[in-house]
Length: 286
Image 1 (cartoon, rainbow, N blue to C red):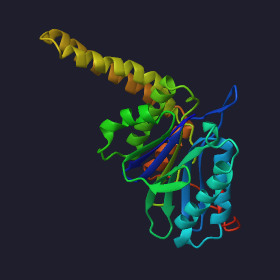
Image 2 (spheres, helix red, strand yellow; image 1 turned 45 degrees about the horizontal axis):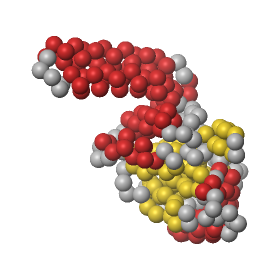
Image 3 (tube, rainbow, N blue to C red; image 1 turned 60 degrees about the horizontal axis):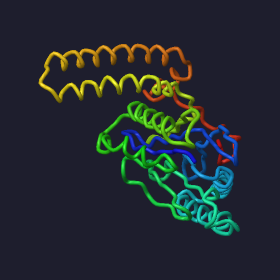
Image 4 (cartoon, helix red, strand yellow; image 1 turned 30 degrees about the vertical axis):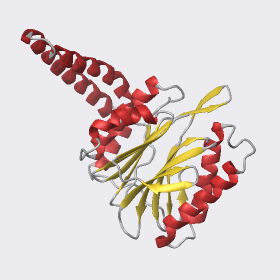
């Protein structure tokens, strides 16, 4: 039960997810997205489904990829993911009876060999490339697909893509059972930089979106009739609402140090800390 999504943007790939985890009759919250490094490059990974099984597979990948030649990274990643899914899920005594034992992954990969970014999705034991601008997994994927469809062919900046991702996650969390918690993001860029799991105030888009959506629909519905006065009134209301929400949102973002640092980074003014020479070749941020 969850929602995770991947978006291509102008500078690379953005992964995002909610934070809700469920176990039996309980509901928990925790990270389901992160990144790791290896000689072959950097990987961002978002998961849905059985969190423990998925994390076990990710940790196995992190361990194995530390000693793999860079040009063999993807082949080894695919091999390990298949082995782990067969070992943990296909061999489970409840396989085929309990849907809660399976999991899926969305993966962004920056190659130190090719110096570019790619995106992959797993379906059971298989891993395949994602060429569409948007890919969603988890119970909320259907609603996410509907919301993302109008932007399928748009060339978007990272900042704009984050706003779109935050909006989609907020709608899924509001309307799909099993999805909730904060929204989490990892952006893998073509220049090799990667953002950590920032807790962005883009979650406030949940408050902004409802009021803005209503104003947009009121404008749309005013076009049905012949009353130009009602149309102009709705157009003015939408403009006023948009300006008020923009000022409110900007104030919230500027007051959050994490946002200021993130925006500085995405606009080329900050470089994330690099591993020290004493650090092991691979690092695991999950």
